[in-house]
Length: 125
Image (cartoon, rainbow, N blue to C red; front, top):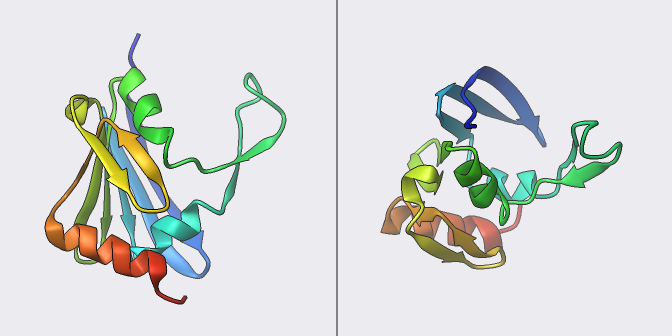
């Protein structure tokens, strides 16, 4: 059984706005800046009670498998455009991202996106 989602959420990541929108099987996470992706990795998210009563850090490395298993796709973008694609639309792709590691079912959006992520990861806040 696959999942369909309708969502329009606004998030605050260390004072920077992020928006998650979803329609059907496609989600888009729009970040204010590429660096916010690495800030998001430090956020603890509550797990559904059927899984655990604990919180868990956002795990970027496991996200593509979760999306793919539910037939969902995610575009992660910043103010300059798409950064990463993940999930079922990219199930035959594998990506390696510095400091994150291997991301199955994922694709970097462009060479410019790769450089934005690399610079964001190693630049000071």
